[in-house]
Image (cartoon, rainbow, N blue to C red; front, side, top):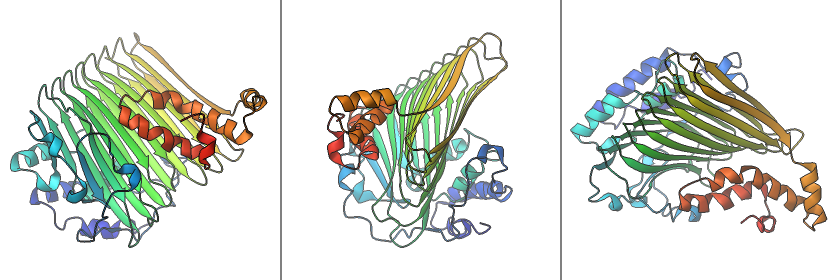
Length: 438
């Protein structure tokens, strides 16, 4: 464990713009001052880092790229797309032509940023969080070679959803990659973003350090979707950090399919009165997989609101962790915040550790939180079986019904169409068992 990421850290500063090297050095400083968390670290009490390896390497930029995207990913979501394979940008698989002529919309890679764009990236990168308190985010900065910068001017509108795809191929052995997305949404701007992480069939072990920063200006509206579909020996330790200014609105949706280890932190901060955040998520580990979501919503000013709903279905011998925290600061009067976490265990060996938290320092607020852990409803299962539905199919129907409300709540129709069969396949290895839910 002492040599974890040693080689990627040594390789990261090669072939990057000069202005990015100074940012990397800042991350190296914070990473070097921290020790890896253990089970004695409170926020890592139920998550082990034993899945990490000491032989990860950064991908060779000159390695041949796939000739085409996997079939399920070819259509995308109806808008411009940037594709990275093992952390390396793939121009032949990407298409930003729909952005041509889009007024006030700027999308670029860090590697191709103009001097003006580089100055803005340098100014705002790491500004949504404290690197000394988020050591894996500091690791991300230390190993950063490229990223995506989305800059929306005041009043700008992104007409179609921007899709950023991070594809793991890892064909030549264990690979590490750092994903970074920085979004500056100006006042009254409007955009939809889809981040997707997928491991190709047969991919070797991998480690992804993923960090997304979202800064919403006054009155800005952002729909943000983050899909974690890596499986097998993929390890992903990442975070989404967002800051919301006055009257802004963030719609945030998360999906995590299982792998050997996924740990995702989501930290939202309300910095302006009237800001609102909807935070929804689904996690679906099975086998021996492990998923850990830690969320924090900071209400720092008055007259803000947040609604958070996470649901998990844990199967076989899988484990899950959900820690949801709402922090109401002393000046945050008239806050309304709600948090709900519901879990379904479909096996006697499945396990979930859930901990909703309210930390309130204001006296004029409306807050609620709750968590449940249950098994499949025996009466509902019996009812379906008396109607001629097999036990296997009934279990699939009940499992899908447990999360269907969140899937149906996805506003982006193309994404909703993509998610339903993808999610249903987690419960039904035989396609005939999905006939009543698709």
